[in-house]
Length: 106
Image (cartoon, rainbow, N blue to C red; front, top):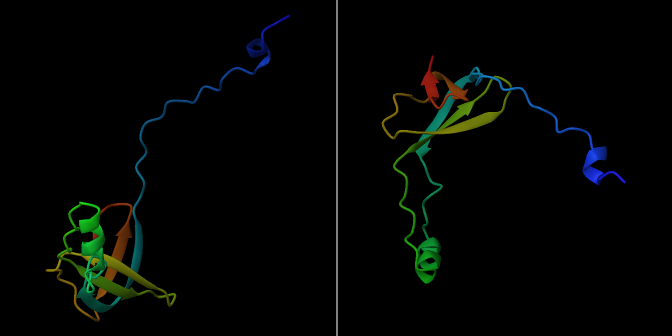
């Protein structure tokens, strides 16, 4: 009697390919607001209390700005940027995905 492994199909060989670069995706729009980034803020101190109970340091608030943009299709996208961004409300800009460059004026 043949072992069970002898009945199985051979393991498929995956071709070795070179790393392909992915073209960045660009979302053009209009800046409608620039506000302090707030995801790390803890106005009630509850996160500080929980982290203290767990014996862990609380995360430090980010020093950043959230850029809110209106897109041509009516959707809204946001991007977290440096607090010294050169973007202004009303300016045309583009959020660039897949490239790590964030929001750029255009």
